[in-house]
Image (cartoon, rainbow, N blue to C red):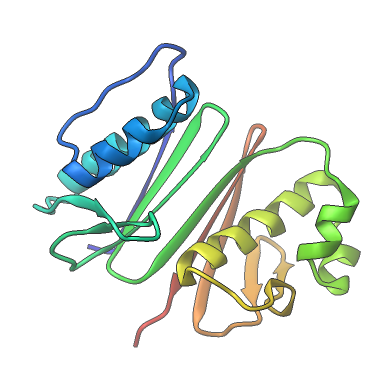
Length: 187
């Protein structure tokens, strides 16, 4: 097993819940908005689909902070959603994934999370969302980051470089979606 990603578009009335653990089911039912429930149910169902495809016999449970994990361990998981899309990742190494539907950016927000160097290299919204999703994926990988501006992402051709050399990162654009994956390199 290396890693596998699954991108899923949520249908308008889609709500399916297959093989959800008690902690996941309880968390989903706490949500009051139908769209939020659909996103969560789709995310966990996609994780279960990935587990099946990778022949991993385990159960998705939630940590106290709400982050999904596998009950027996052995693999790492990450989930992201934006509007009507869900992205799930499973890897043998710690992983963080992020997905954003591209939209007009707020420069004030960009300045809070991006370094001056990163902002200089953003020529358009697509460039910004590549960096933004990488930052979010990095954050999800570690669970917290003291100062996200200190971690810089740069691009040479289509290759992503991270100032944290323990990280392997990828960025993808698909139509109006920006997708990023950060994975910890373990020798």
